[in-house]
Length: 352
Image (cartoon, rainbow, N blue to C red; front, side):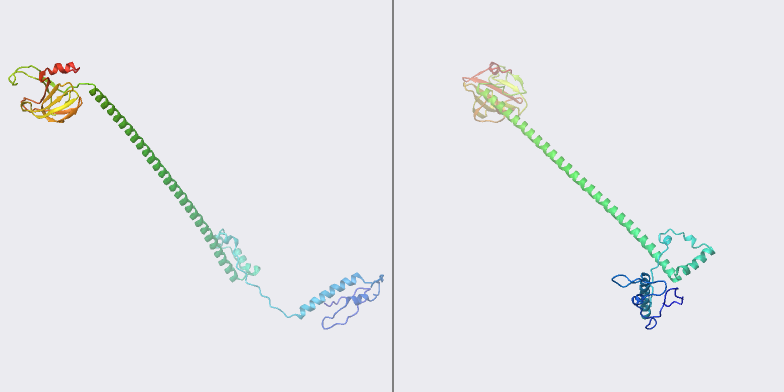
């Protein structure tokens, strides 16, 4: 760049040849010339003497001249600024702006807002865009907050449903376990009851078998039994009267209800069983010593032949034959001759 200021005293300024508006200048060549005036350069040993001041000024001038010449030679380029996105006002974006202030009738505030585009360089259309962008940002923020709230509520509902499902599953497992425990306890109780019942039945069976064995043993030993039970003696041996063909009673009458069991007084064998005229249905039991015991007026006969043991049921009380009511007519005959049945039974230890 050319300067019209005078050269400083003591410095000889010589015009340099130029090429066009700006000429090339070799500071090295000029600084190699011996200056005039006060500033003299001493020659150094082994090299060319230079002034540091002149060298520095020359370098700066060369760089500056080259840069200016380059800028002037290049064609002009149009520069355009991009449209910046509208920026919302912070109070409006955060939803905290006092909208009542916008409707206030303060003329100074209106003038300041009118002058704001001039100071900030934003035209009214850009201000409107900024307002729209602020509303859009605010709505997006509200939508995002609402979406986050809905997501949190959905997560809470899902967690509540999961907890409820787990609780229901645990209750179902507990109920199933309780049911299985109750069924197991009931099965164990039933098994114990069945085992106890079987034990009692076995004991009763064993007792019955022992009793039967004892009875058989007693019978085989010659034990004797009463011919019937729940009876009343109505006629004795030797009683006289017109009811008997021989003029006197030849046996002992045990009055009892029809169907009362009749038992063998001792072990023996049945030699006769059937209808016998005035005696009705009759069974004759022969004992081992030959004694015969007659059971008369029976309603039915259980045994009609074979051996029996003392106490076995051989028939039932009835009123067949020549009778006035149901009873058992018992006769005891030894050698074909009748004897008193009461005395015979008493002699064998029976309390008639």
